[in-house]
Length: 195
Image (cartoon, rainbow, N blue to C red; front, side, top):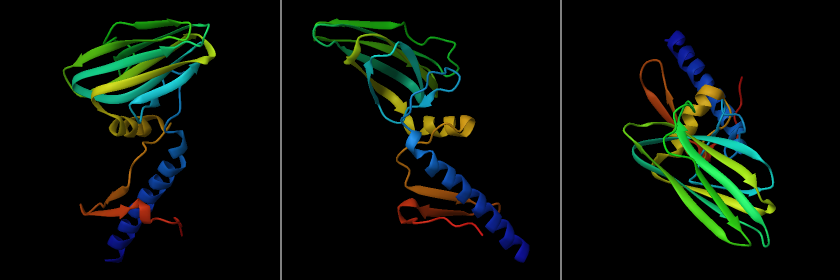
């Protein structure tokens, strides 16, 4: 009986440690990544930014089966020229799922185009947002719609890369070695202590 209790306590301690790691990384959930090998988990359907840097940002999320669209809006300052592009790839970043979409706006105008992919199965999807020209007063926004699941994508990327955590979780479920489960309401957790 004592050995079984010790195993349960050990499993609980491991799960609490995982919770601490999740809570510590919560601030980076909406981070950007310029490394295609370590894309940032996308935890919401919108990305905004300025066009002051010439760089590509990479995000990952779960989608499908069904249609997924990435609409790119580019707003140029007046008088300015602004350019950005967007494309959706398979999770490994190798196979394009839609053609490259490039948007150019000038003189205070906002222009938009969309990239749409049709997925036959649920899979990880890589989103590349290319910022090209425009300066700090020109902006872009990408809106993702369709059969998407941002929380699940963030979980799988967190498990693989430890580079972020999904926002919005309220319950931790502990699965014990004996098959039983326990649920902890995270809104009730004030402090975690290890002994």
